[in-house]
Image (cartoon, helix red, strand yellow):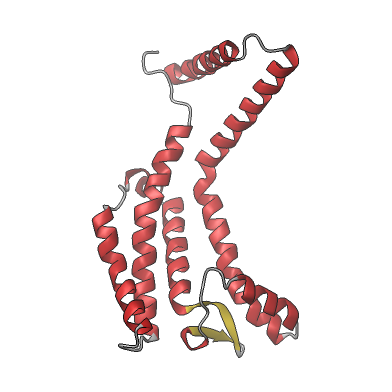
Length: 206
């Protein structure tokens, strides 16, 4: 523990010396500005590396919550706000009325499949946040397994688009769940690996 504490100042000193070498020859004002920019960037990277999962979960939570806000707005007569909100989600969801949930008699902004996808990704993010051991030990899903798990959604959506069959709420929810789970398993552990690299690593020789 003491060695780790000693290594942190050494690391900071080494980084500072390296920065001084890179900006040597600049005017004093530009040196101060460059150091400030680097400090802000390092602080931002440190914050993201520690809190990226909370940031992602918050964004997904607001995104999913917003999908359920539109029906409430419409129910209470705020039709203009409800219409604006549902149209703002159209870029990420086709919002086919027959494939969507309804709340208080009004359409939710996300269809059944998209809601399953984003809800599953949020659930995966929450599990990683509350289970640190899982977050540290989980290895990324192999891309071949990822393709296999997203195939059911492609088949269900593709055959429906071609008019070969009509999907139902069970299939749309199941295939959305598989897509969300496999995508979270494929992406989130990789983000965790990248953010770990952003953290200062103690000098193992100290």
